[in-house]
Image 1 (spheres, rainbow, N blue to C red):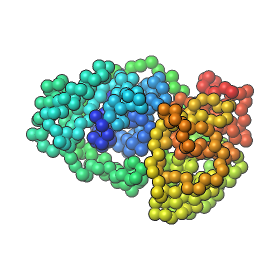
Image 2 (cartoon, helix red, strand yellow; image 1 turned 90 degrees about the vertical axis):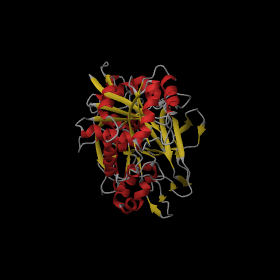
Image 3 (cartoon, one colour; image 1 turned 60 degrees about the vertical axis):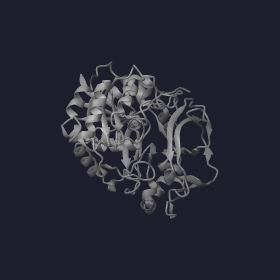
Image 4 (cartoon, rainbow, N blue to C red; image 1 turned 45 degrees about the vertical axis):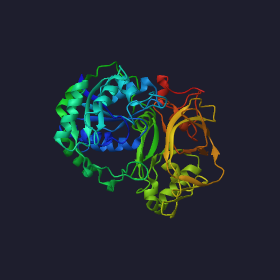
Length: 469
C-alpha cells in the first residue's frame, strides 16, 4: 500500500509550481505509472492541464479539486483516498503560497497536506538567490511542526555551480535537495486574459512534452518517488459511488467552448442516471433528457460558431421554455443570454432564454468564493462555489433572482443567481460534493419528476443522502 504521494507547494504564486507539476505528471506517465493529479482550491483550468499531462494515450486519470471551503475535511480526505485507488502515484498541486488560506492558513495547501498525511515538496524560485535560501527553508520547515517538508526543487537555476550553493543551504538546514530547473522560455504555458488557455490549438501537448524533457535532465525523479512514498491504507471511503442509482438522463454540454467541469460534479450526476454528452458547437440536436447541464468554458472564443449553430440554439431555447430542467453556470449562462459581445466588439446571437446581454468589453475580474442560499425553502442547505470571470451583464431585464449570494466572509454580494421557469443560471461554479442532493432538487422541479414523500428523486435517497423537506 506504499505509493508516492506529495503536495507540490511554493512560498508564493508565480514560482513555477504548475509548470513543474505538469512536467512531473508526464514524467511519471512516461515511466509507465498512472499518476492521479489533484489541485488545491477551486481552479478547474489547472485540472484540465493536469489531465492532459497525466495521460498516456487515453489511459490518463482526470484531475481532481481538493477544496476546504467548498467541502469539509472528511469529504476531502475520503475523495483523495477514493481517487487514489486506481493510481500509482498522487501529485497534488498547491495554491498560492504554502500557508495562504481564506483566514490565516485555514484551507491552505499546508492544511490539505496535513489532512491527507502527505509530505510537501517545495518549489523555490532561486533566480536571484544563493545561500540565502537557507533562511527561507529553515522557516518553512519549522513554522508548522505538523507539516513534513520532505524536499525542495529550485527553479530558474541556470548552472551547476549556482545549484551547488543551494545544495549547501539545504544540507545546513536539513532539507533534501531534489534538483533544479534552468530557465527555459520553451516551457512557458500559453495564457489568455482568463487564466490558462486550454483551447485545442494552444500547443499544450508539445509544451508539456518539452517541460518533461527539460525537467528530466536536472531533477532526481527516482529520489523524489522514494522520499514521497506514504502508506495509503485507510478505511474504505464513505463517498457514494457514482453510477449506482437513478434513471434520469442528464445531457451535459462538453466541447471546446464548454469544458470547465468539476470531476466530482460529473460523478455525482451519474448517481442520478445516465450522462449524455453533447456539443453546442457541433451537434444539431439536443439529446432527449430530464436535465440539461451547461457548464462553464470559453463561449466568447467560439461565439461565432455557437451563433451559427441556429438549430442547437433553437433546441435549447425550446427546452427551457417548455419547463425542462437546466443548470447553467458562467459560460453556460452566457450562452443562454440574448447576445454575447466579444472583445473586438462583435455581437453574436445566443439562445435568447435569459433576458440579458453579455459583453467581454470594458470588463473587470470578478473573483472569489461564494455562499449561495436558495429562496425556495424546500431546499434549505447552503451551496458553495467559486466565481471567476471577466464578462459582464450589459443589459439585464427582469429575470427572477432565485438565491442570495455572499462572500466567504458573509458579505452580501450582487452576483445574480437567476431562474427562468426551471432554468437556473449564475456566474458561480458550484461544487456539489457535499450537497449531493442538489441535482435531485433540480430534477424535482421538472414537469415529469415531482417530489415524492418529501424526498428529492435519486437512488441516493435509499442511502439517506437525499435532502428532506
